[in-house]
Length: 418
Image (cartoon, rainbow, N blue to C red; front, top):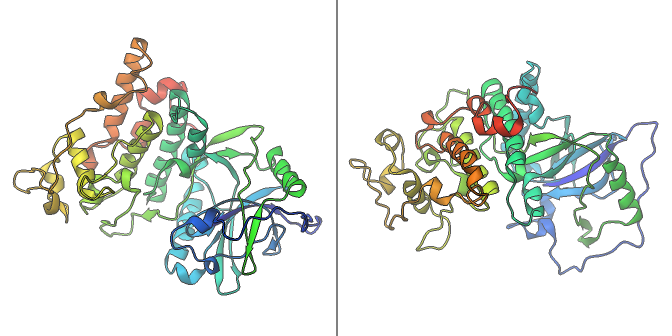
């Protein structure tokens, strides 16, 4: 995936003329950005060049990012160009179909629509070997993950976290109740901060590329660019949930047991291959909150024998934190018998259980703040327990979590407004 920043090209405008000489080159043997992705194949990607005009409408003014399936004004937009269509199969249309659902539901006026990144346009372009799907989105600034890395403590302060959660739960309530979609892949780099389409940061981005071209390398006639960071905008807008490439519609009458979610954030029903629904997003958010607020994963899933992620290790950590899973959940899981005695619920996966540790034992951010934060700490842990429940039915909904006391305290009131 290549994500590029573009200016919309109208007949009255002339495309910018970017330098072709005096450009810093990267050594051919040095791997950069998308080249470091496992199984990277250059010919899967569309050969974008800065300065190109695409679809007779969009001029590429710089590279904003990259990924595994695509490459990431004065009205400016962000263009997501997927790898070649033949490499994606049915997945090529899945994300576009999700965005069409979102667009249809947005007309009904739910306040959470402003916290979900919309699609502005879509089209296919012909590459050297195949067609490539292009999705056009409003541009955004940095992700929560990038913000986290700017903080030496690698933790977000309570106020910022609460604001992010307010908009995230608005987005999830919109997706769950209006769009009938489970996101399934919520993580800090999928939550980004909004920015106005006419912000001076875009002009500064263009001018910097004109003045000091991005370093690049040429391989077999293709250019690979280093990502250029978007400057700090004049004013940030609200956080926005992005990246719907793994989203799943849940009103199709099917029983969903697919293997979804990032490993460390996987809900127990996903691991056990029990039917899952919207509440996997709630579990996912709970694990992510802990990660960005406490500075480390709540569950690692690191297996003591293999030294890497394994489902049995992840479930063992859940037992250590939450106690044994209820029989009703085990009865629904296709894989439950691999990890538990179905008659007693005892963990029997071939490795010892970790020592039991409660959330109170593990929480450090508010504990370190001193005795004056004890009420706040207790409220925060209550919020966590509303999400981290074995049984999906016992987890609070996104709408209920919008009214949580900890979020309301730090955001100054109710969470239902836009």
